Image 1 (spheres, rainbow, N blue to C red):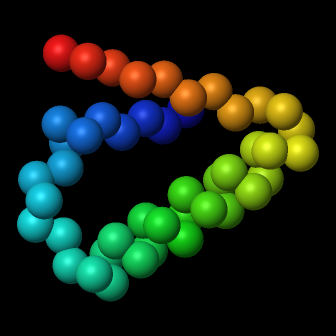
Image 2: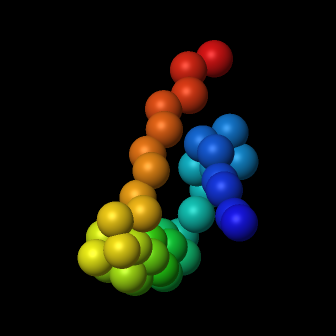
Length: 45
């Protein structure tokens, strides 16, 4: 299992890297949706 928090992001990512992240996230969500296994959580410090 993989998780990433906003604390791990330093805001210094190139557009190319963010496009790659967006594509990967889209693939994960697209495959998880039909299986009904999407869980979203919000963490507030």
